[in-house]
Image 1 (cartoon, rainbow, N blue to C red):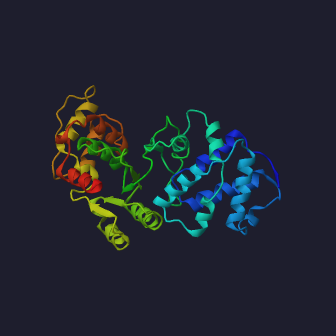
Image 2: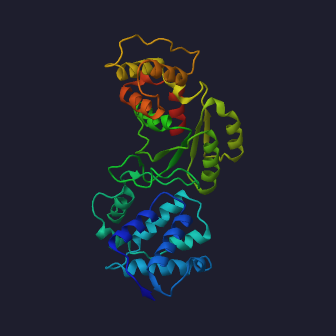
Image 3: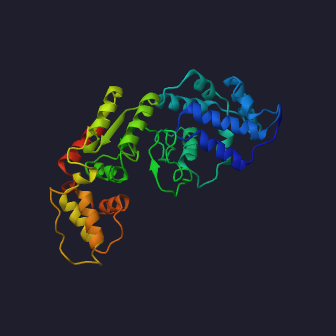
Length: 339
């Protein structure tokens, strides 16, 4: 073989892609093929030819390029731990097992990792040091093809979203409000979702929840907790036949997730947002109108910017203080998902 060594940057990017939370067969094939196409000089293989190569040969070509670009002895302890973790989370095919059973020199890669990188690269150091409690892992690219990955593709330690590592359970919900507020409500009840390996996926709508669940239930071994708004009863019926024994599903009784927020918490948040804008009393917040409809009207008539669920959820988060800020159904959801 004739090899063009990978640069330090290429090595870090490749290992970053290999250690993200994504189906092993998909990510390993993509990374290995990219390495072969760009850095294996002889034999020179075309993209179409790679699809015909057996997995073990494809793996060995890519690993040869990676290890040729590094210095130091190979220690397969890290490889075994990575493989064990992937097998504990995913249903691994025989082909994926071949890809996971590699001899990448992770030990040498750890030596060249600088500071300020995503946690999925930092965690390799923790594996190497045999530290059992690993730090938070950055946001994964969604497992569902076609999902919006633009904001997730550029994460860093100082970036936007962190997820727990290792992941032990998925919460699959419709929107960003649940993603922002569920961890805060859980903390009031004395439970830290991140530290307990629970990751929240905001699917972007009830139909997307079904799409995500079908894929997750097929490829994941870990439990999935599905949270749907009240108008998603048909979607719930689509999910139930594929619900595994380890999974749970909850349909919000009150309407949307925002309708679960106690009125006192909403008023406290609105007072916080309007303290320098309006002194008029807050009126019209009742059980007869949806919380989102009320908030859209309130923002429009109080001279605030357009109502955005994510921004309002962040403001609510700042105003959560004690158990009185949790409705009975929120307590029920939290107790169910951690049970």
